[in-house]
Image 1 (tube, rainbow, N blue to C red):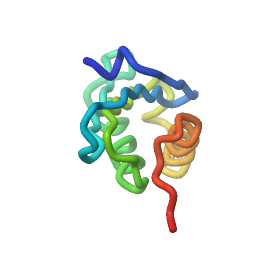
Image 2: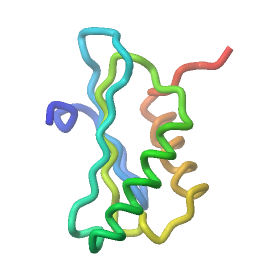
Image 3: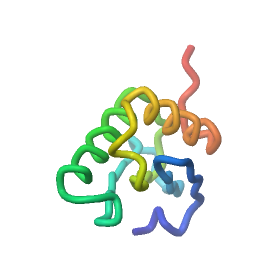
Length: 99
């Protein structure tokens, strides 16, 4: 994945990889949970939490993003995951400024 050659920030629940693209189309996102996260049910829950957390944010266009679930993600609540994804995105300056 090209985004893995970019910049990354890690938190307790997730890792966010990003790479700028040459075009300025909408941000593209992938969500990944390896078998290390747990069984199929835990991996699917982690991916659902990450997708919902990312959906609520206004991403800057022209970036490829990869959200990787870490082992604590399936046991966390939605608000905790949302807070961490938002903090990582702000740290990497990936959010649009709201007018």
